[in-house]
Image (tube, rainbow, N blue to C red; front, side, top):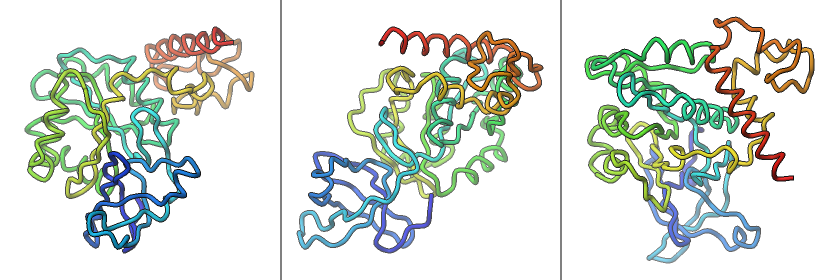
Length: 300
């Protein structure tokens, strides 16, 4: 995230037309409303937006949003802007990894210019799935962190890599999201009690997306990722393929420019070795791509 000026801040929450603003340096926190021009232009300020503000003269709502800076990305589900990193949390034991969910979330992140990180949890309890996870995602070049209670160096590496960024946790229930939120941010986040509670429950009921300042970054409470439906995102099959770094790289050598990597002759992706793309990951891509293409064909 870019360094903010004295009249700039991050929207961390928006409810009923009132927006909570925050900035680390120099420290600022306040409540604002948006100028009427945004409503006229049908622009809705979102959590994660970087905005310019000024004094409103109203003691109850002291600030007014004057301008929204250009967005790095905009998510429809969950509705927010400028997410930098998606922390995809995967258990190396139980629950068994849902590779289809991981693939969908990672592709969606890449398409929207969000960097997916793979966080392997419970590695000190059960590492039976570590090799398979690494085999699936190392060829893609995703940053992978093997976290455990005794792996302080890996935890510190992750802290350094997310410093100053807007991040979100995502993953199956029971993989340890709340545990690692606590390990990463401690009392700076857990004193709210709110995100810890939400991250630990099986069914998400959050109505409003909120960013939580952690002291080093912002963590988004983003329940929408757990039930990500690619068709609802309006992502096309071609865009979906672009969400796979290894497919992007290999497709430059495909015989056909519009290759779907499903069945075409001369497809460099299908012909690639397992060190370039994991065969199981390729099969999952082909299943998800076929499903997505069928959805759009049935629409028309």
